[in-house]
Amino acid sequence: MKQFTGYQRGINLGGWLSQCRQSRQHYDSFITENDIRRISSWGLDHVRLPVDYELIQTDHGEFIEEGFQYIDNCLEWCGKYGLNMILDLHKTRGYSFDEFKSAGFFQNTNLQDNFVSLWETFSTRYEKYSDRLAFELLNEVVDRRVARIWNGIADRAITVIRNYAPTIPILMGGVENNSIASLKMLAKPRDEHIVYNFHYYEPLIFTHQSAYWIGEMPSDFSTPYPNQISGYRSQSRRCLPTRNLQVYSDLDPDAEIDSKFFESAFAEAVHIAEERDTALYCGEYGVIDQADVASTLRWYTDIHSAFRKYNIASAAWTYKGKDFGITDEHYAPILDDLIKLLS
Image 1 (cartoon, rainbow, N blue to C red):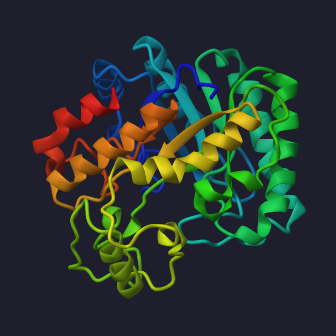
Image 2 (cartoon, rainbow, N blue to C red):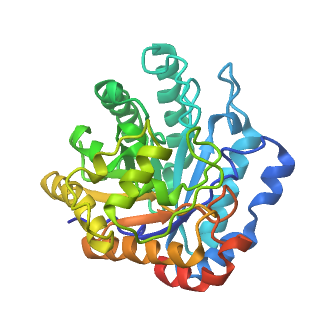
């Protein structure tokens, strides 16, 4: 399978310019040049930078030059310390994945025009960095029913980007929160620089145990990794009743999840990527700070085994904060081991 060269080993900068308190004080302090230097020292080759539209654009569509400066700074620091960067539009005007409020984005042509215009602005501003920058069109389209519409919107954005940056890598993810199962619903890559992007947090009952933002999840729920399929399935039915349990449907209930689970989960996507001659990128994966660290390390070890087997590029969620930050105190006992896996 084609490799996503220069973006094989990365980490997210979640919570800095996205999903955060929108203030200059936060932007100036959450991530600094020293953090980029530290990430580079680990031997990684890139960072994924999630950006919410509020950083750079008002609700009326006017651009905020001061906001662009933070993206510029990150690009400068990455260049200084030998890292590539993925610019991920985490939220756009009219669409928010985490609250699942589309505000009509997939039906409103004005909002879609704004989205395309924003990517034209990114392209004209950053095309000169095409050798060390990639664009990610939009983070986690939730609704499966808009798959065809999303393909059309993405095609418009890609057309505009290519007018200014003909070779910059462009990442495109599918519906159902960048589900790996939805990659087959994406349009075929229109050129050799399109990369298929997915997120992977399975078994969700393990990686998101006690997650306060999941309404059905008990705040004191705990489960180890690995565990038998039957155990995860019964726990999911109890704690995640509205979630799709298709991930377990074809598995032996008496089997224990290990690296083979991830290899099997990735196999169809690898086949599709090979058929369509594109690379695969896992832009998010990780374990909440409510899980015990020994289980967390075993999960990371198994998913990385599958990444390496298939040459899937990846970026862990996340560097700092957001309940998943690997440099936070919870992960201190395993940080060195995690860094070895990431690099």
